[in-house]
Image (spheres, rainbow over the protein chains, first blue to last red):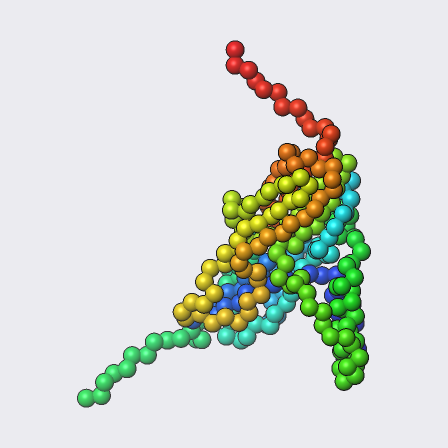
Length: 122
Length: 152
């Protein structure tokens, strides 16, 4: 228990991006809001069954900008997920547009639903 | 430079919320931690960071995945309003199972009062990587003068 409290302390300064996750017969679609992240500051990794999304806010700011007010208190996003074994991490497709990351992770062929034709017995 | 905008004091409510969660984890049986505060923060969209230089005020609106053409920006005196709708498509659709749905959807509206010296006539906005940056020049700020090319 004490450990999780410590973990939270270290993770305090990262932003947790909100996500939508959908499943279809083909696979999983994960959509994450990462405003301010550009393709070059985004890092997506899959190690074994662990998917990690990390990104850094990359904004153009004038020199001598003084803060007046802030609701976003960190410039780093971090979130990780466990992938179930029927997903194929080799074939992940990632798109980033207007600060929204869309990840498509297909299911392995053997896990995709197959239509079984029912024959009528004579 | 990023730190100049993010290095601010955390807001007190947030610190209090974290403290409460930690207390709950340490003493889950005690009822020692106060009840969670009811706040609308979770549904706040877009989040705003505001900074200023000598010449202008910069409002960074974290608004990923919106159509910049459909965002309405208005200035009334020194009050800036950002409004629009975030459309994320159908919530339910056939053959699709929803596991998580955390992203903000629906209409949004944020109203902020800016320092009084801003000039409501000199506003510009850009949208990049899901961040809408609104720049409002201060009154009396020097701006490169536009020279009209006259056709002889």
